[in-house]
Length: 121
Length: 108
Image 1 (cartoon, rainbow over the protein chains, first blue to last red):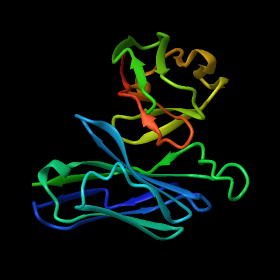
Image 2: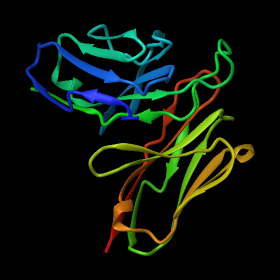
Image 3: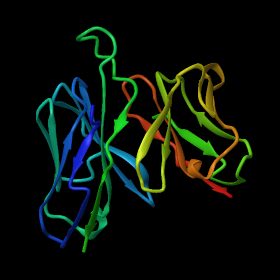
């Protein structure tokens, strides 16, 4: 398996522009996570999905951020409009389901993509 | 929510030395993982270890769940071990919470 794939790897944009980050999870994984890493705040969970459904978006900083997972193999994180304080590395991760279908148990080991380094000028 | 604390924050080792990194967590956990973030920024799974001991080459980890801590051992360190080591844990249905990491520099 190719692992978690993220694109683009680097993005430089100007304040006010729309930014779309993309993620392809590992095939067969039921959980998908979006994280943000900054020097000041470390690694923060933004949102996670189970079977394409958003479960917890309490980490999304504000309404300018939105995430979708239209199918099991693709997710996007969108920032509109972008601001300089959004500059960070954004990671996508996926994990397999544990337990029986419908048990609600969270997946275990999370596998991270290479990240997208975003710079908003 | 669960609190995850790591120590030491920074560590400098001579190549070939051994080290122990510690992770304390504030509540019982369902999931505890150790990650290595290399100098290129990639996060690599080292161990999934909510309890017990595991070994992988020069690395091993032990989690004592009843005492709420986990240890990562690095033996015969190499320059390629440099980077930041993160411990992350969750309890119940809470999100995975990361510690602030231990920054390791191994010098030749």
